[in-house]
Length: 446
Image (cartoon, rainbow, N blue to C red; front, side, top):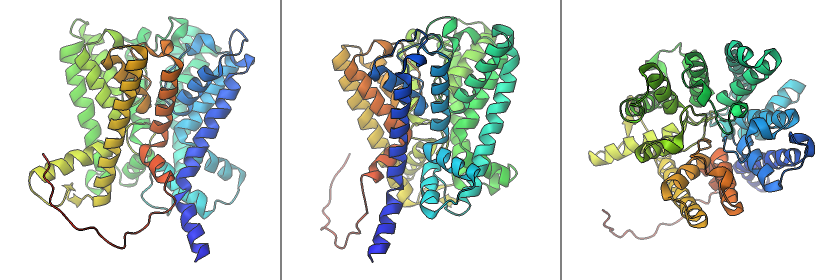
């Protein structure tokens, strides 16, 4: 019995492995970024600023207190890139990858941790899936770098252009949003390429591919892109992605960037539609946008990408399940269905739990930052949503925030990357089954 209990506890605590892994990665990154060699001026930066940068990179967010291109040396930029790559893959995936490369045996507990880390539906075949995950990551990032290479070599020379192509390809695929374009203007992101179709296409493609998740791509490849044969989760992700790409594009094109030439208007509208899910690059100035556009972007940032992807947020499936279940209840039906499949009750409960958790965190963070910084609510909420959704978009207020506000954003980036439910489950050692039920009493709501 004791043996069985220990095994069950170890299974539940695979979530703690994820939490501790990211925590250790962030601390190691902060320590390295504090070194004088990490800064371009060879002077140590304050630990809190290094911690903020390390958290943002490891949690693939992109919020920064320093301009990445001008503040950090080659060593510092390399540290940030490694943090982005490990953070995008996930610390457990990176650990399993090391074990695969060194030929070490992968035990049951490592397999369970990997399953939880990538939100895989089953434990069987998890090692094969990890190998596919790693090979596909290398393939997509290498392809992205090759496609960006001609543009950046032309603009920055061969060696620097090669480094820029690799950096931005990894950053885009991992949905990190870190850039090296500060050489053209501090915190300028990709605004200098706003009217460049090729850069827009490659970066957006990498963001979408990374944000869709390898479970989705694996299912698509296994079923040869036949929609009817796909798993329910893949269908939900594809439909949700299509809606969340079409609707915001129409809004931005017809209501936000109306004074922009047609070609640029299409590119800028498309880029600002894709990047909140959850990449963090921008080709437009968010501080000059309408409040309605900021609110729409906040919603997109909170939704995020697919489970098991490099994107953050509540996840597409969470919002899709909430919308479908609400529609079901409004129609007076008992079961929530989609694509001729019934959605399990646990998934609906988890979706509502996650939604409430993220909403409470967003409101609490907005209240704290707005009060502490004496700033309007909407820009503060935008920054909090950006951190919690691990996006990295900003209206420009992050570098000027106080220590307290930076700590709040650090916590939000960490929670957003490991996931709200992971954090909740890690605090519970074992779920005790209820042996009795309380009496039912009618309650009126609404």
